[in-house]
Length: 301
Image (cartoon, rainbow, N blue to C red; front, side):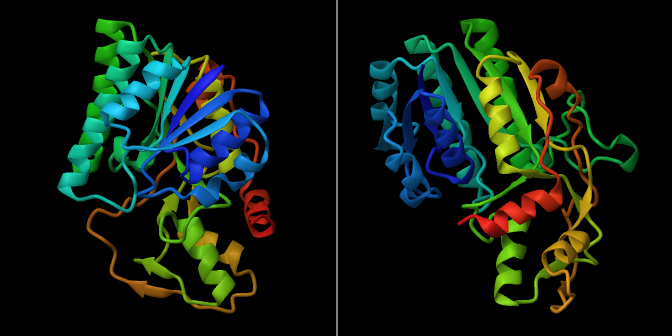
């Protein structure tokens, strides 16, 4: 199968590329390297699989031409809504990237588009009673959330009007090897533990997150290439882990005290997503518990 991975040099994308190559697929990576790194694809390049890397803007005419030439069965769009860039200009560009991907899929007869979106943007500030949150109530949080919701609407429109199939995966907090400190709470705290640097807690550290190991997330992405068409599907554990408990896992001896700062006004207090729809439509469930995932993170480069 020919597959295009937009954002394939990033944290999640590079792990997906590894998996696709191991399964014998031909993979084209489109990445402008603004966030990703070719170093993330070192294992993929050494594997001897059918991999081609294209340093391109995914919204460019060159990317469109590439998709027309390669005629992939599946496009993965993993380059939307990066955590580190939330300016108004960047959010506007996200919609253009999504539109460009879907237009290329329409023009060139791509069978399926799989999009990854941050669940925290889609579901706003859920009540404690609604946790783990289900897919039925998309309540965007801030401009980033509105853009994420608009992407879902765009996917639905292209499916209805042009028969472009899609699956949108609402990802919980994914962590694992290759994640850059500052781009996720686990990677940031892991670096702090390695360097004996006090981590920074916003508030008292009791806010919770749904922590999902990278291999589990990649497995869901692979399954979505053939299942779950026309749906938004949560990918998470359904379990909450507090920021304070996460730090205790990474610093079990309690040798480094965290630094406390005032809680951000838009801080999500408690969060987890329900994986029930994923079990039904993707035949997927998470299998890596937090302790196992953190152990693998410590033991892998």
